[in-house]
Length: 564
Image (tube, rainbow, N blue to C red; front, top):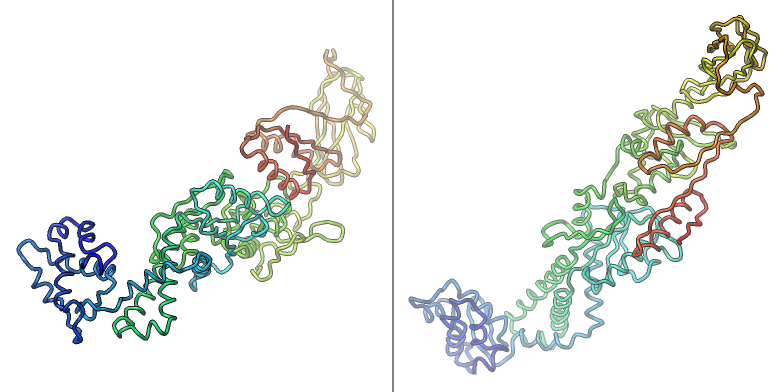
């Protein structure tokens, strides 16, 4: 009778599922029998009951483990529909207890109400941030399409819906879509996205169902009015515990975080066994973990900014500097995009960076360099530029002619042969500088104002000198009795064009620029044509093409990347 009327599984069923010691002593059956008889089968008007010492005395024996008694009583209270407890006194009654009411109400909770409550709790927990937590972190909840997540230079935590599990292929496809595109355009700031993804759903839904059932009972004034005082206290306690259980279920579920790594691959980070005691909020747990792993940084020093400077860029717009930390997988993500202002202010004050703008003619004008710059004064804009120290120094001390270099050097000719010399200038920074007027001289030889020289008749070494103001440069010409067999130096002074075509290994691209192209950067006629071919991974080919087009757009270049 006790098994069939008072609990869904019965005391015997609880014993079968219990530990070996409880099962052997049949404690659930013995304890429930004692309580039943002490309470007169629930028929007594005096509310007869069994006190805990009486239960212990009744079941005690040489083979009984009384330490297991609390577990037994807890199991009976959780399953018996007519068992009541108050201050360690237990009795069976004729009225159903809260367990029976809970089971009935749980089965009547509609699915839409469950979904709504789970989502509401998820949003509440991810929005919760302590006083010292990340204030600038954006959050986007339950996106279904790429337009649900804006493309902007800001750290954004994208919380996927509870039915998008980390193990599902559809979840990975959704993440790839959100990373690849923003509406009809390619996404630029993809590394700024972090994805919080649930590992399981059942516990959240079950906890939400229990909470809604307790709330339904609590809101039913007629049902609450029929409860005894002890049951009303139990209802209040159960309601609070159900809220806590749902929150803990959400904490445990959202243990997976997806983001792009430095090699532009999607990483799945498992936070492990997560509980609410690990951090003030789920958001802060995720952020703190990624800060520890150097995937997020609260700040970046100006020296690091100099190290990551784009090689082909002399003036770097402050807006592009900030954006790089959310667009390039090679850089850590800034926790607060405005933190770059402190980096710039410190770099300018320490004379590591120059702070400049362009005038109406497009020329750089230095505003600050090596002097105090407040963080509030830093402007993030396409029209405000940073310069490295060497380039800023050039604006403090404008380039001027510092030396003359003659070409060719140490030429060897026969008597009375013709040679044309030319001169180039270098500024104090070793860069090319135009030379306006030159005076030529060559003692023992004849040379005109254009550098056309007629060699002496007598063999020997002669000095050729070019002067421009207070500067001069020298070279030498050797006159030999028998001219060399090589092709004679051309004397027509005609303009020539240097051309080269070839394939450069990727590891030598920077060396090619430094050793070959850098000396011609100031030449107005220099043109550079670039083409590349790279094998495409068939699985990610469309995403690769979209990424290339997005990058080309950012550089203001033709985005016609083709696939063949």
